[in-house]
Length: 309
Image (cartoon, rainbow, N blue to C red; front, side, top):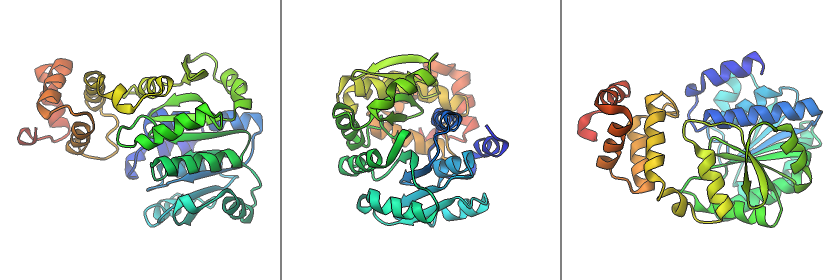
């Protein structure tokens, strides 16, 4: 990993968005393997937000272009400029209307003739995610990879549904999971990726070997792969496991992780909404995990007021 990438990862809180440490590690590992193999090509991202993933991809390989697709580029452009990324370019518009031919045309203007990595973090509907997967499958060169975000997010069941369809039709199939994201490739490349990532724990996901590249704070890979492997709704996985999920949430915050510069109150509000766990139940779980002293320390650490509990 080059110095600029490490410095960027150390200062992620300067950019709003969601890129868990495990997901960043997954992107870095895949990129390193591709470069070692001589798998060249551009990178593309559906849904950029403020650019956390886009900037990481651009810094990992400054010699090849990164094309970001989003409705608006006002949030990301200042960050691209601040990092001096001459290899990053944005295309604005409804990503569901941007097809493979349009992307090839944009990349050709940047001197790129192939695509080796695509990040899928678009509109999070079933239709939008399926569009992004279909377009990605058309674009990827041999050895290319798609990395899909929010696979295990119960707010976006459409992402999960589109992933199941992609796997079952062998459009793109999964080979690694980390930090809320799953890496996918052509079925023809699965053996190569399994070999490149040998040594990690492997689970079966609908008949495909998926490597668990990190045990990050949220333990998201377990949730992702269980949901995909069993082919059920996210509610069927997350809600029965909500106490375990809450325990990991508490441990994450106690360790100072996965805040992304967002207040503890915001994260708690989202968790309560998504899982059905009440605030009182969450406080009780936090006390079980941390003890009274640890719970009070957590509140002080994040400026959390008892009145909002």
